[in-house]
Image 1 (cartoon, one colour):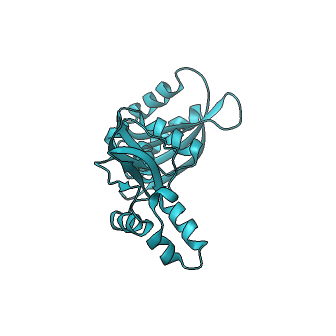
Image 2 (spheres, rainbow, N blue to C red):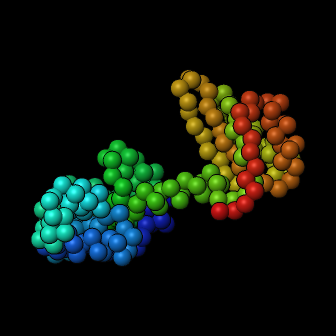
Image 3 (cartoon, one colour):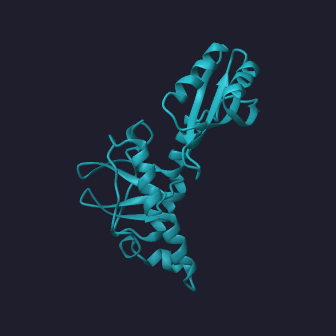
Amino acid sequence: MFVRMRMTKGAVSVHEDSTLAEAWQVMEDKAFEGLPVTSNGKIIGLLTAWDVMYRACQRENPQRFLDTTKVSEVMVRRVITVSPDDVIERAAFLMRSNDISLLPVVEGERLVGIITQSDLFEVFTEMVGFNRRGTRITLQVEDRPGRIADIAQIVKRCGCSIIGIATFSPAVIGVGNVVLRIRGGDTERAVRELEEHYKVIHVTEVTEDY
């Protein structure tokens, strides 16, 4: 999955000479967590809702501060960006490692979109199948080649479909957790057969689509 598949295209930006009040109004109207700052069509900064609120709350007259302060005085000048062709995992890594909630998406120097933490949360829930009804199974599995294929064969043998799968590596070396979401076929049989080969940690039913 690539950034272009999840980004908000044609992202709105704000000029460096705009006031914070003007920028805040745009963020409220669009329900954005922040805005790229542009000058002559190029990105020169990033303004987040958190930065605006934090600075305003420190002032004796927050509204006057918003009305009289330019975006350029508050914006972050070191802008981290991604390309539309970057994989979605790179966007998540950059947000996490730099403690930011959104990234401008650029082609060359041209702003073409924006991707936020909310977009990544949506991707995560879809990848693990959380937004679809089915049976959620957590397995403890030894880290050996072919384990995922073996699990898939058991599920297939029981006539079930895998609608989501994720792997997690706990602190124990050589052991991992596999979280499956399956539906259709004989899910109870699938659970029983999985228990014969793996340690089943948790099973639950998701009874409605979200």
